[in-house]
Image: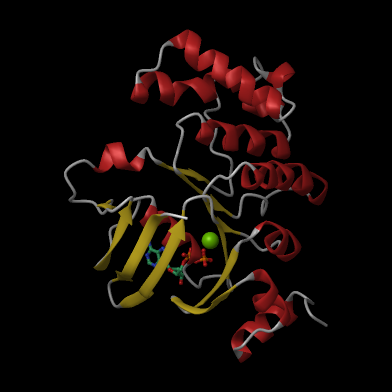
Amino acid sequence: MEEILRINGISKRYDDITVLDHVSLSIKSGEVVVIVGPSGCGKSTLLRCVNSLENIQEGEILLNGESVNPGNKKPAALRQKIGMVFQSYELFPHKTVLQNLTLAPLKVKKTGRKEAEEEGLKLLERVGLLSRKDNYPSQLSGGQKQRVAIMRALMMHPEVLLLDEITAALDPEMVREVLEVVLSLAKEGRTMLIVTHELQFARAVADRMVFIDGGRIVEEGTPEEFFEHPRTERLRKFLHSFSYGE
Ligand code: ADP
Ligand code: MG
């Protein structure tokens, strides 16, 4: 498999607080990497850096060998190749579901309306929400909104999809319907970098697990190694706090 994303020794600081400390990670095309770690360890910051929402003080982030760091000559074009979905579904409240999907392709990609709408309808059908195309976000459940948000990200044809705790704000009964969508994306070979606290799901979807603590990668391995044979005390403690491996 070919490397698609390379995070090369990046550090992120706010004044004198170091949030990411020389983090390096390489992701191959079609690979699903799941990041876990205690609250505040830097997971969201890492994804935000990859998506160029934060500047970094050290290191470099490369997509297909090209730097995506701000300051690069064409970060906007490169940034489009990275899609992100957040914990709180940030759908546009005054746009319908279908308009939410087509907005960026029409405006940013200059896709034709017919083409964008056809693709949007196809994606809505895929997640069972075709009948909701003319609804506004306020008329949807949290799980439905999050499925729309994932499809909206796919509309831009990203090469890498970043998912930051996308089920954390959902009622338990809606978590599964969203995770199933993510599993189907993994099965079709999407490259994804996922932050989640759903460890069972992580184990099922991940090609590789990464544990971050205090802004550093502490442990990395196959799901089997990671969950069955954690090498560090810190990861063992973390897994135990989820009653995992007891
Ligand atoms: P996680 O997603 O793992 O819970 P975050 O990446 O959100 O953690 O945050 C990592 C650390 O960075 C936290 O200690 C947080 O307080 C700090 N942090 C995040 N954003 C800022 C900011 N804008 N200014 C200062 N500190 C911040
Ligand atoms: Mg976070």
